[in-house]
Length: 447
Image (cartoon, rainbow, N blue to C red; front, side):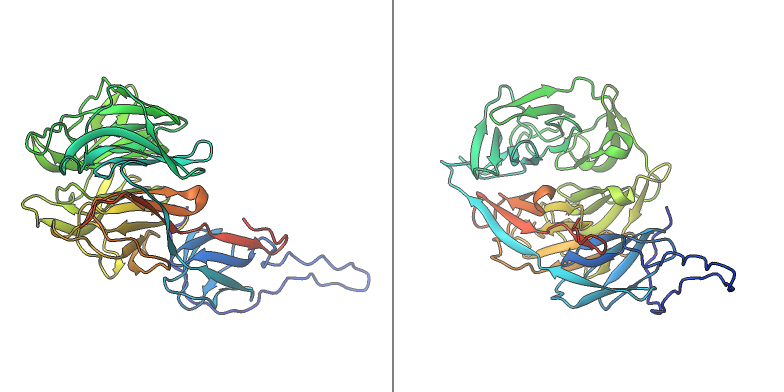
C-alpha cells in the first residue's frame, strides 16, 4: 500500500480522451474510457468531522474544497474528511473536472434511557461494558464498583440492556469474578469476551493478581470460566486489553500492579499458549493506568491517551502515544497531533468510531475532584492526526468521570453511560455519528 499523502490543491484541467488518427479508408478507433468513470460518486454524505472512503480510477487526483482534507490510502482509494462545525456547501473536485458535493450530517446527542435502582442496572464505575450484536442487539454491563452501601463497593452483577425493548435484565450466574477495573475484549465468532486483570478486595486491601476469565452470555445468563494457563502475565488494574485480529492474539499493556507498581509493560496472549512478554523498541510512555486506548486497525497500531501516572492524585497525564504493531519488533512512538491538545485526565469514557476513523473521549477528571466538560475527538488518518473540541447538537449529557462507552456501528452511534460527578448516573446516551454514504453516479444507489 502506498504511503498516505495529503493531496494538495491541483488544477481542474479536464483529461481528454485519446482518439486514433483515421483516413477515409479507416475506421476510427473507439474512444478510451473517460477517467471520470461511473464508479466515481456523484455525492457524499459525511458526519461532521468524519470521513468517507472514495474509490477512484488509477491516475485520478482529488482536489479538496475549503476545509476538506483528502488522504490517499492507496493509488485507488482516498479518505475524504470534513471539518467539525461545517454546515454545508462543501465540495470535492477531481482532476477530470467533475465536482462532487458533500452533505454534512451534524453530530448529535440523544438520551437512550434512564432508570432507577429498582428498574435497571445499579449505578457503578470501573465496570466492563460491551456490545451484544445478537438478535435485536443490546449491551452488557458487568461488575465494577457500586456506590451502595458506599463508594468502591466491589460488585460482580451482570445486566443486559435490550435495544428492542429498552429494558434491563439481570443475568444469572454462579461464581462470577469480582475484579473491578478489569478490561474485556471480544472473542471472534463467539458470544463471549475475555476479561483480564482488575483488583480483588476493597480499596484498603486491594491486590491485582494476574487473572483472566472467559465470559459467555445469552439473554438471561452470564457464565465465567477461569483461564488456567496464563503464562507470563502481570497484574493490571485499569490497563489496556484488546484483540489484534490481524495476528489472532490479544494484547495487554500498562496498568497498575499492587505488587510491582504502575507500569507500561506489554504482553500478548494466544489461546492454549498463555501470555508472553512483548518488548517494543523506542522510548516507552510514562507508566500509567486509568488511560484511554483503541486499536487503530487501519494503521496497525494501538493509540493511548492520558491516564493516571505515578505519584499522587494530581500526577495525571495528557499525552498521546502509539504502539506501532506493523514494525518488527513493535515500537513505541509519541504522537504529536495537530489542533489544541485536550485537557489531561484519567477515567474518561472513550470509544473508536471505525467508519469516521477517530477516537472520541468524554469526561474524566484532571485532578480527582471535578470532571472535564465537553467532548473531544482525535482523527486518526496517519500524518494528519488532529485533536478537535466537538459540540454536537441536542441535549448535552451531564459531565462525569468513570463513565463507560462502546461503539454500536450497526446503528451509527456510540453509547455512553454510568459514571459519577456530583450525582451517580444510571443512564445511557447516544452520540449519533452515522455512517458515511456514497451515491453512485451510475445507479444512484447509496452504499
